[in-house]
Amino acid sequence: MNRCVIGLQWGDEGKGKVVDILAEDSDVVVRYNGGANAGHTVVVGNDKFALHLLPSGAVRPKAICVITNAVVVDPETLLGEIDSIAQKGIKLDKRLFISENAHLVLDYHKKEDQLREESLGKKKIGTTIRGIGPCNADKMGRSYAVRMGDLRDIASLEIKLRTIVDYKNKLFSALYKAEPIDAKPIIEKCKFYAQKLLPFTIDTTEYIHGAIAKGKSVLFEGAQGSMLDIDHGTFPFVTSANVSGLGMPSGSGVPAKMVDEFVGISKAYTTRVGAGPFPSELDNEIGQYIRDKGHEYGTTTGRPRRCGWFDAVVVSYSATIGGIDSVAMMHLDTLTGLDELKVCVAYEIDGKQTTFFPANIDKLEKAKCIYQTLPGWKEDITQITDFGQLPLNAQNYVSFIEKSVKRPVTMIGVGPNRKQTIFRR
Image (tube, rainbow, N blue to C red):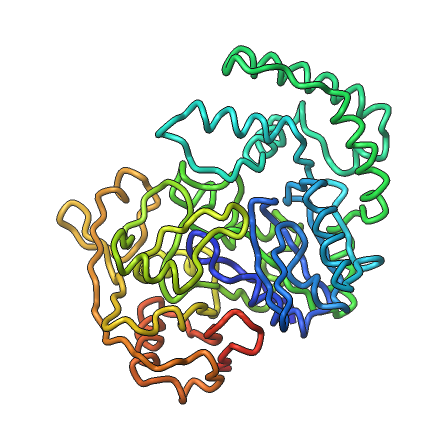
């Protein structure tokens, strides 16, 4: 069975845990979008893994791990992750493959990201300064793009890098009056990357199709969340790629019809990092309660996440455009202790109600949430593994969300560990 895991909110939904669980029954785990701006956390016993580029299935010793063409690869971060999990006894030799067509994030991309954000002041987008946007911009511009396969010919790459750095320096000087950067250290790094990463580099599209043809079970892992999709999210406060379910085919080279189930991941509430509209945000003591209890601080940046009530308009929209079959709801335990809970079931914009998310910044900034209030619960649910054993109010909360998003909630997270999961198949 082939599955695809998609974030339904603004990222940080808990995809790492879900992918880790589903990877137990998967032969191949495919990371098909994003870059080192993603942060997927997996907890195994007393070990906690914070992965940014490696598929979350990497902690499963038998899973083949694939990084595809649409992932922008920061070689330094990737090598650090490989070393980090190796120190915990997890080897990736002969089970990690990287697309020869994946684009490389290099030092000048991070510099450009930083300079651009600083220049915007209060109007900044709120990127992670990991160079993802500038790398994707070079990809679309084509002339100054560097891909994994370019590491095979260092002599030609050196000439290309000197041209790119010369162009970037002119850009940095003219726009930001920044000091020039030196091409030589970047070239030397690329020589090192070539030695370390070329053994993993293949045509991943051919590999994945071959695996499916052989009857292997493939799990596709998305990064970020649908609301950060460059075309269908809260533009311009988005990432620079298609990170909704619509990005899976182009990101991997595998058509959607070859995937048996699309699993959408959401939290039992809503969070987002950085700037941008957030209709159900709680900028008060309840928001802080959720932030502290849910440990809502970025895996990648450490920034405190903005927190709010569950927004069914957002999740329903993401599920609709992404062809989601079922929902895995994480962090239900975080809501324990609140007297009452609210779910945003519709927006009011210019005096009219809508239940379809308006992916237009002007309309969205006018949106006022229409809430349904439900009673909360006080009981500890972190050790419960049977849905019927949850407090009745917790059961009712999940059931109400199922009706609101018109998708079954088949998996519920009640803690960070693998075992702290309720399955409802």
